[in-house]
Length: 314
Image (cartoon, rainbow, N blue to C red; front, side, top):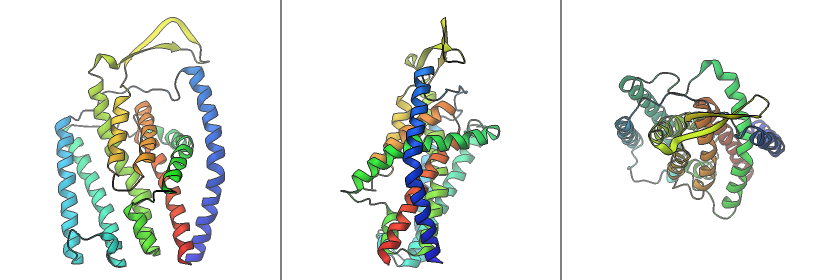
């Protein structure tokens, strides 16, 4: 069974290695032509400012901290392992329990976050980046954005980790013990849970609030020419609208990278990835395209990790 999974992973990874560079080049050519024609890579979609305030973000941080501590205490009581223990040194079953507990905690934090912004701030579906009428468009947009971002992000990551190995805890777990059960739990955590939770926290909640803050400043008033459908400007016409400045993207990207500060060189490619995700969110104000990009990046990384760890264990 493991051998079949290994063959499937190797085949998919080889296919991605061929498709990503070709797709990336094609998408960049099309995107730059669009940029030259319309003045932007992706059309900007206006929306109302998010309803949550700084106090809501503070409450979310407090709840996330409390939930993290509670999960650590529960795991310590269940496993009998002191809180200060390096989890990389745990036996296989306890490592598995730690990974499962971590992504359960992430989902619990997300549930609390949604409760706060829905009940306290009165946020609606669009405030939270949800659009049922845009699902297919967002899936396609997410794939295209992944192809645009994958090559620079993976090239930076490869260049850095070739000299400075990653210290991501999931990578350390799997390198120390390439158990298929542990990999399955890590796959769910990295590919299914992390993209959803992190994009909601860093893009929708944090960047959404930073854009609201930026809109209060006169510098946020961006005046751009009205463009005809073929891409020609309308003489003398302008389209004035309050558009968030670039700094909310940079701040949310920096905080996203710093959240992974203990993972060795990973924050550098993650910062580049987060800049792209921040731009994607700012232009669409929708969650799904960002989740698709994040999911595909993590999926590619996990496939590579599985192939490498299984080859070393043979």
